[in-house]
Image (cartoon, one colour):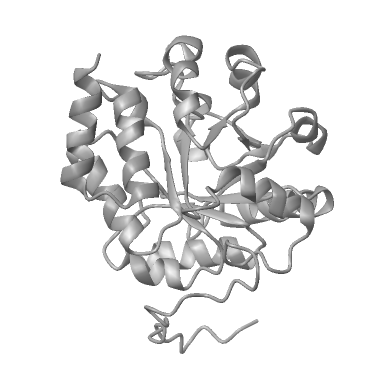
Amino acid sequence: MADLDDIRDGSNFGLGQEVKKEGYYLKGMNNTDWGLKNRMSRIFNQESGRSVMLAFDHGFLMGATSGLERIDLNIAPIIEYADCIMGCRGMIRSSIPTTTTKPVCLRTDTGTTILTEMNHNVLISEEEAIRMNVSAMAAMLAIGDDATEALTIANFSRLVDIGNKYGIPVMGVTAVGKDMARDARYFGLASRVCAENGASIVKTYYTEGFEKVVASCPVPVVIAGGKKLPELEALELCYKAIQCGASGVDMGRNIFQSEAPIPMMKAVAGVVHNDLNPTDAFQLFNDEKAKG
């Protein structure tokens, strides 16, 4: 194994230097096959190279939390304003219309609601993902957690094997336990581990120094929205992440718990795809909200 006694922090991140894409518009995808690229093209806008993903997979850990009491009433109506949706198989099957043409990122790891054991998850079968015609599969990695890191990496590696076999992108979702620092060093490590283990997309959290997290991850990075913030603050979070090189957002509570979810989705899309600054995006939110 590598000598861990003299690990030196990286310093040459090539900030400001774009990654060569060699014919395909998303970084890190040059050597992937046609099917995987085709699915990535459904998720990431081909003009902006970014994505607004709508996450509603919270229920498998939190139950009917605010905004997710009725997926058919609270989530289904706003799907058309997202680029991609992320949920669990039960909710997608029971509550999302089969007529939707939005790509699906399927949460493929499942486990207990006991938070101290939440990462002892197992994967659903690859047949499920294929049967549901998904465009991506997602699973969590608990990097830095002594009790669960090995288990989640083993799960994730198996999922990447499945994805490579069938041409389905895999999104690594970086978990944050109570003892894990929310800083660029941790998120940079966790994101890089996802990519090193074969992720096509990484979902992580924004933090100060995020440009280094993005620069050291060779595949697209999207940020998690995290807890509910006031709308302007959530838009500022999106803006800062995009300015640091993020390829989009995968937001849940900051959309479906907003006082006006559809206007908020449009405002986030304005930041992600049109480079709106937070002030202009917040004005868009208020204008759309006023329309009723």
